[in-house]
Image 1 (cartoon, rainbow, N blue to C red):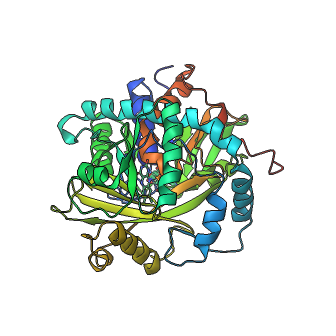
Image 2 (cartoon, protein in one colour):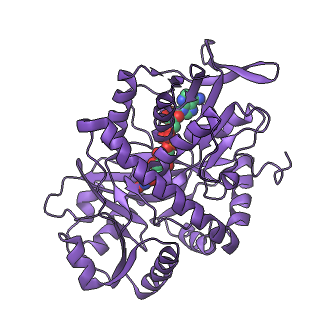
Length: 425
Ligand SMILES: Cc1cc2nc3c(=O)[nH]c(=O)nc-3n(C[C@H](O)[C@H](O)[C@H](O)COP(=O)(O)OP(=O)(O)OC[C@H]3O[C@@H](n4cnc5c(N)ncnc54)[C@H](O)[C@@H]3O)c2cc1C
């Protein structure tokens, strides 16, 4: 049992965490990654937030109205590149149907449990990685509100978080400034979510990758999975572009957005769209906040990392290979300057821009579980804005499924094919 070969498709944060958890269970793990070893995908330039406070899924009431208003503003934090694409239309309709109050209420305790467990696992992982990486800093996250309405809305979310057993404090502008302890902050107040944490995603990815290589995981670069081999209806191998077949007793699809078409080639409907985001990283010693900030109305994250202060935002539903839209970068820069006048918009727009493709599911919740037709294939994708935070718990839960253990967290709401019937499949 313990020497079974598990092929993990994708070496993002999810794939690497899955590989690490499976190796600790004694499986023979091969990770296939289509990019080169020195790559820079979604799991590298993100904001590095570990967020038990994110108890509201992306698909929530209010998000649609706000999204429509933002569509009219070219510098806003949200955009959809319209295109004739049936998958996009189906995904959009499912997303709209999912954005209900009942969905939020049902998802909140699950999100809390997933993030809290993952935070504990992030800390344990950093210990295993030793001096190669700094432990996550448990300073919380400060949501900074520019106006009264935003503060009232955030205070309601904070109340819900407290009801769920999380720690959150609603603060005056003076208290926000004191806790941020660095740059000037223009706001009417904010909420400090004390259970949140942060870490450098790039440092973690590099250390985790090196750790896996040292322990003998077969990490293969430039190895794009193009299809699957079957034996009696069950997957028996993974076919690479070029024709080589890698034998597999189990397969984990952790290919980010590409997991949708890989799943489809196995007859499963797992809707995903690319939610592109941008970030810049500023070497700003004097303007360094003591803890990460989320600039509420701007939907911008400002995280103090070892490599500098990272400023990231925007959700652009568009193919990953589209060129950078300078209007979105300007939007991030200008709104950051409005909240933090020490961060000059012209300085931020002059920095190199990183883009990453968030794998966005059709209800804002990850897909985590086995395929119906072939339970030896497990999907671990669609973490949207939370993949860095949820990487370690995803690894643990996938290892439970592969090893035949009952996961401590009920995964029914994360079933990968939960939309199959609605779409008539
Ligand atoms: C601006 C921005 C800020 C963010 N901030 C945060 C944050 O603060 N906290 C948080 O939790 N999350 C954050 N996120 C989200 C987070 O980055 C993603 O959820 C996460 O990186 C997704 O990880 P993944 O492993 O699922 O996908 P990916 O990182 O995309 O990895 C998938 C891998 O699979 C490979 N692949 C795909 N197809 C194939 C194939 N056919 N064969 C072989 N390999 C294949 C790809 O090359 C890729 O390397 C942010 C994202 C952005 C863009």
